[in-house]
Length: 525
Figure 1 (cartoon, rainbow, N blue to C red):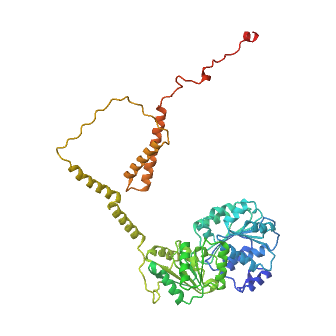
Figure 2 (figure 1 turned 90 degrees about the horizontal axis):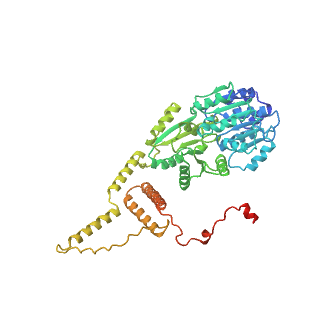
Figure 3 (figure 1 turned 60 degrees about the vertical axis):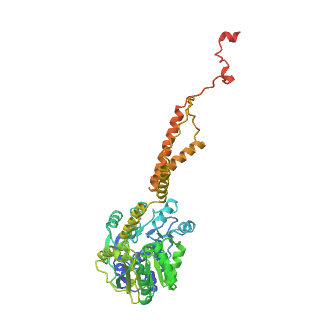
């Protein structure tokens, strides 16, 4: 079946032909006619099967009739990441080049001023990430009351990134009479509840079992020590027939470290992760597409939506934390019917994560041997073993006498001989007779005086001596309790002090007789 049987317009068929596509994919064959009918769609298809074109093509034909108004987009496409939003925008530009449609892109990393100008002109298609769209709505720059079509793309990724509350907030601002299209690679229960809440009698389209991998991708796994993973990866990049490859790491920090390592060993590689600015990320992607950078080290920000047909290899430098991410990672290769290779490097500690992935895809990942010439280096100990070693070191340190304890014990030993050296016949000196003196009342020192500060410092020093060898938090709490106790004592002492009067020298104005109220007879006199 060709695109001509799907009911698309001649202008759109011409644009599709210019792009080099002749036959639609299974998801496109089922979704495009349904969307053109105006029905809601709930589509589940594995990554790399052409989901983006299955909603962009019919939307272009639907929106060809009508006119956009300022700040009131006619359709809305929600994407979880900036890269996905940019890619969908490129699809609209490619397929809609023979239609006069205005498109607006709202993503982070772009100035609000530029986006405001595009919105003021009126947008037939608004492509946005949830966070930036809500920002513009709160600024009064976007009104969704005229939106006719809503597309939620990569819905399961929206769930993983915590965007579901934002999506619910956005959907409540849309008109009730609209067409809602929901596309996802997997269908967890939360996404099904979202579809039941915001869709009306949707047509369920499922071209593959949820969380399945493309059969055209050759999968394999190598179990290696942690410290040998970089050397094994370098051997694979040199030994395999790698045209271009994406290497996935779990953490942004590991992306930077691995990128520096590959660069030092002579590989032409780029990096892509969430901490990079948007212009820099787009520049790296463009170099990777053009072949200037054959290797891209990336986090899971590149695991979805990157439509780069020529990717020959995908390397999982780390086993993904979430099993669904494995499906999306290896889906960057083997796209549009091409073959691809996916190799995962795992350690013995990753056995549980590997089992979860194999359970999700319902097939074992074939194991393969380490490339020839690679000398394996035993990796670091497991986390539980490292915790045990740290605990043993702490116990040994607690049993070892500290410097203050050694000083104190040495001082005690030095005092003992001097006491024994006193002659037995020596009599203690008689104490001097005490002279009876009038007992003076203790004078309260003003708060904050040198004497009080000295006493407090001595108390804190005694507390520090008592607390040596304990944790810093315990000593800090004891200091606070001691200081609080002293403040209470100072307050009580100030309350108990007698009130002093003026004695025999009161001010003169106290001795002036008070005048009483004037009487009428006094006024007459």
